[in-house]
Length: 216
Picture 1: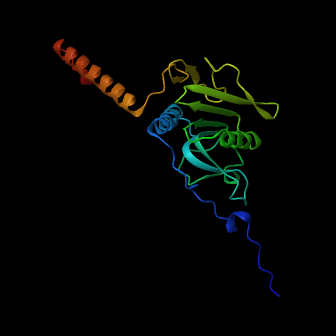
Picture 2: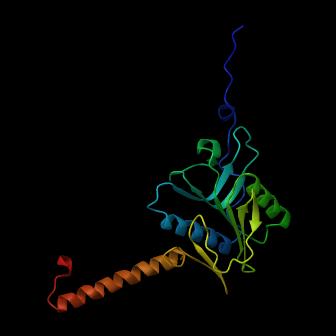
Picture 3: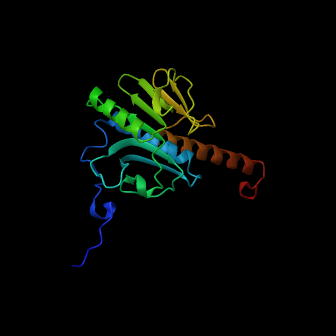
């Protein structure tokens, strides 16, 4: 009798790229997810070993495709940028997402969020931030002595892994290490337009003074 070689778990198990659930339940939740994800990508654009993703399934254990979690925003330090259908940890040098963001919607239940917290705690998340735009409530946890521990005061809190700062007054504001606030895509476009307008006015002024701005 010829013995057939045994397939490795990853060869006989499929890992779906979607859990069948929508990215967000409303426009406010979606905007926060996109704003945090895009600003983190901009912040770490020149660091090749910072992987940032939004609405991505994380599979921590090879061979178990039922054990997964869809993360609103995740950051993995030590893994290269690039497109992925899902984050299969055993293919990523077994490095789990270190920082996770969840933006709450009215459909989220306390039981659901508790399960997520326990999942993140068990499988190695170092920092976990949860924001509810409807109530403007921000919560955070950081890993200490093997478990995720609540951060008592998030006002002015700086993420040890990312260097970003949180402020929560009338709404949540997040600031990069250089002090720049995280902006929506519309705000980023307006900022770029204003910079171009200032450059155009400066060029006109230089020409009035007899200076070619293209030679400066």
